[in-house]
Amino acid sequence: KGACDAHFHVFGPAEKYPHVTDDLRYRPPHEPLEAFLKLARRIGFERFVFVQPSAYGLDNSCMFDAMAEMDPAVRRGICHLDESNTKDSELSRRHALGVRGVRINISPIRQPEAGLADEIRPKIVRTAEICRGLGWHLDLLLPGWLIGELMPTLRKLPVEFTVAHMGLYPAKNGAKQKGFQEFLTLVNDGSKRCWVKLTGIYRF
Image 1 (cartoon, rainbow, N blue to C red):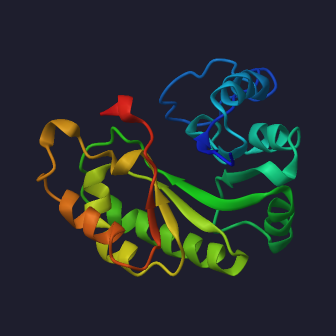
Image 2 (tube, rainbow, N blue to C red; image 1 turned 180 degrees about the horizontal axis):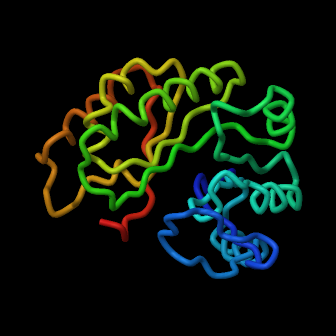
């Protein structure tokens, strides 16, 4: 009782919700809310967290429309956000809708790239400050090597944050691979800020 699916996506018809990202990682099928709920309820889920998928970029409309179809008492949402250009009124609207976090999404198959950590760090810091003001959390989808390079920043984040897909450390490199033990230390530092989503096992 009370079981929660903490990470799922919905996809509407392409003619209504076009895929807006320049680097589309996959072409999602039409997978509406009712298709998900048919499975979720059979399994026994009673609470739900919508997560904005990469395919829609900053356009959260498909997710917001799906959220509006459900009882607000049993669902929340994690949105994408332009941290440099979102008005307080829009943040308040999203909060009223049930949004409780912001996702920062870097392709999980992206290979080590010099300078990417420095490029993404200001976005993480600024988004964390926005989340702190709203009582939201930060949801990170990052490849393992990037988590390692961002570790000093993650240790100082002033909000709770989730790390999707177990940090995306390649299984073939084992538990002693570079950065993984440091990641476990972050999770277990006693602050209860860093939570790991046990999702995406098929990606390893």
